[in-house]
Amino acid sequence: MLALLIGVLAIAIGGAGMLSRHDVQERPKGTFEIPQTLVGGGSYSQDVTLEPFSELKYRHIVRQAYDYSCGSAALVTILNYHLGIPVTEQQAMEGMLEKGEKDKIIERRGFSLLDMKRYVASLGVVGAGYRAEVKDLLELAEPAIVPIDYAGAKHFVVLRGIRDGIVYIADPSAGNIVFSVTEFARLWDKNTLFIVSPPQGGKAVAQLALADQELGVVDMDRVTNRGRLDALNNATQLLDRAINSGAAGTWLHSR
Image (cartoon, rainbow, N blue to C red; front, side):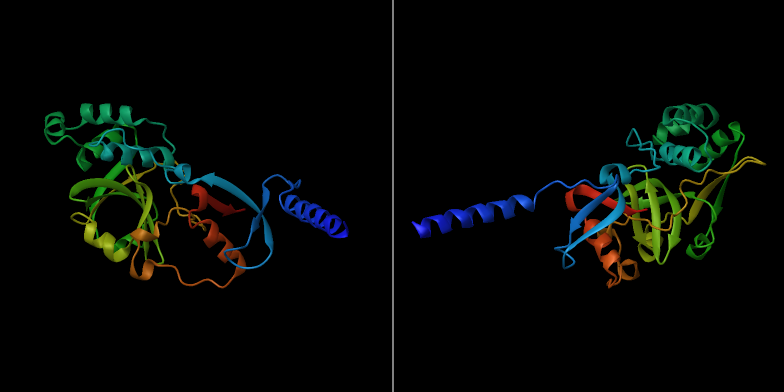
């Protein structure tokens, strides 16, 4: 009888322990506790903002509506998120058909940098094409549209900037992606770029500028050599690495 009572008591204690580990605790808004099984020891509470990767991937990017509309989507990405000019991709396509070389656009099923230049001039902003080297891109103060030869096709993307050997790209098709400098130099078509500047006296909203923490945009499968991150020792950085490894498709940003 005594053994039976001890057994029942043990089950009750064990069950209470199991339940207590899953009790919901009230926490300040925006704060949650993450078990540190991946980085070792205890639990860790941090004030964070959670964003679905599907949204973060295309933040401040106009996704191209058609397989041939990467040029118009790249241009509208800069107009909307760099200059703050509210234009839709459809409006830009219609504008470039009107201002550009319509017959050639239809023939090649796409827009050229010259078409873009003529269209943005009708909006009162200045667009200009350049030839450059990779070292020149390091000094760029604003984003630029660049053509790349990727996966066997010509494709327009927005170069946001270069930092620590990583080229940050806003791709109308693939979202925010990165390349190593060496890989980008190999893909960059004819070393050309197109820059759209604010109208005289105007100021850019600069939402495409690189932030201090570019979390979630670095796809490490697309980065090689010096683009790879070094080992981390700091506990907070280890936490960020664990979360940003893609668990549950959610990315973490420290405030």
